[in-house]
Image (cartoon, rainbow, N blue to C red; front, side, top):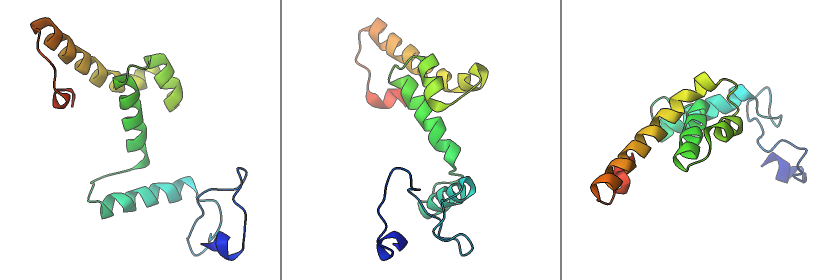
Length: 115
């Protein structure tokens, strides 16, 4: 809203999200500000303990479930350690095992079986 009032043009070198905090109004939203905003969204949506890392976790898991190579997925999500990234590969392995079972017994797998 402040940008429209000041007739500012939004360009790629300008912050997309601005702080609304009394002491930092119209400055770039900090990491801490994003953290608190996501927590507040979680409260409003009645999602317990929602935080920015939840999105990283979901993104990592979804990449693997889509079949992205774990090495590439780890780079896309910014994980430095393979050991730390391992927790996300476990769900993909479980889904693959379920799919293999259904193929082996000649049945069709239903979408809810993967979740």
